[in-house]
Length: 174
Image 1 (cartoon, rainbow, N blue to C red):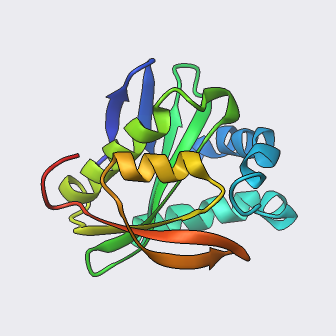
Image 2 (cartoon, rainbow, N blue to C red; image 1 turned 180 degrees about the vertical axis):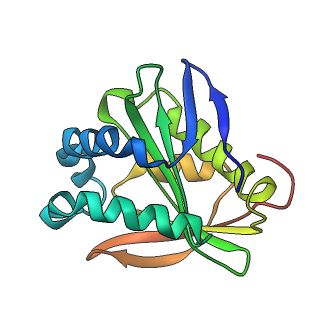
């Protein structure tokens, strides 16, 4: 499995999930919980109570090639975002991402999602990515549009109206 170390602006790195990321990811999720819950479904208390076990399971899923978890890390090792490819099967994966409140609005999500789209094709051999975004999450929908995702339909995400998206990652780069 390739080790993505793509340099992004502002001295950030997109890194493949490792065991030593756990404390920084947990801090990131706790610090941004209310911010995330305003636009995406909340992870719930169980996520935080069972974080260590979930982290181990994510690493096992990644090792098995079922998922590819990435963290956007600054030079101090602080996590500013996550970009994940989950449910990998038959060349297709579901994209999910989140950026810390204090880092939002600087184009980090767009750059990180674009980098993971490149990794999906060049590093993981994927051909297609799916994504979903709630209707009230305009920022996320804008990121998906900027990196070449197209709307394919409507759905509900934890009871909230949402759109579904699709992007080929084998064609021309966005």
